[in-house]
Image (cartoon, rainbow, N blue to C red; front, side, top):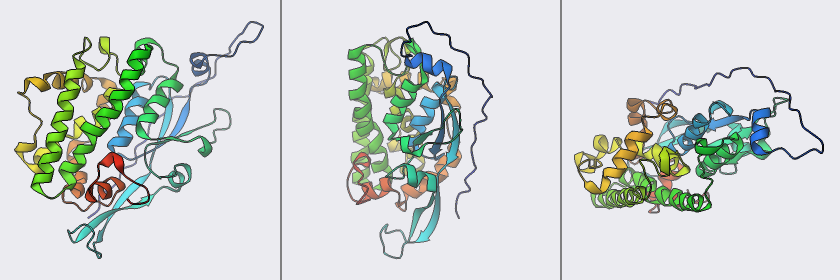
Length: 316
């Protein structure tokens, strides 16, 4: 049986462009001034189940009072017979459709993809599509015109650099191993990926101690690093269902205490809570990865023995 995909929409409020008075000589407007004059709007090509897309959703909802978007469900699945024995399960799950808009605007046809909508004509400009999940977080933050602690990117050059390093680090060490635990069918390999994930979380916990916490940046300022990890941190609960109690993130380990404090702080935020998929629905969806039958690019990459972040458009 296939999962029914329920369209998700975001209702927009009508708005009018305020009159901007400037003094001569004319001065180029700042990003903040532009954002206040014309509220950015996007067609957001996404998929409810995808943690990579979830990163962009978190950024969009963090800036929900500054950026408008229309959600377009752009991926779907169907089950087929595994005639060539690729998955070894007798079945395989394929993306049975990708929206034409997604295939036109993103060379890899992956979500998330943001397509700007012209404020005057209402036309979407596919030539200016923005994609790659961490890039979309940064882009939404910059286009929003936010300032101060509302920004996801610190104004401090050192903190900006530190965040770029750690967004990449948690992506490789705390997100990619998730798929190794689920897709790999050998118990030893699953355990190896889980231990790698725990090592990554402990490293992240240690880094959290460098500021006042509980988030990556000081003074509870949400950041690109927090939004990079959050979609996977939310989804770790599936391990117990599909891999057993030995694959639960420990709660009594002192080295992970900062991580758990971080988790509680992030998932108590309204802008985060309203983005979370239904746990039972997601648990059913991720079963196709747990039994090795998923034929997504990520699933294919992990099946052939590389990390999820090392997927190759040609090979996978």
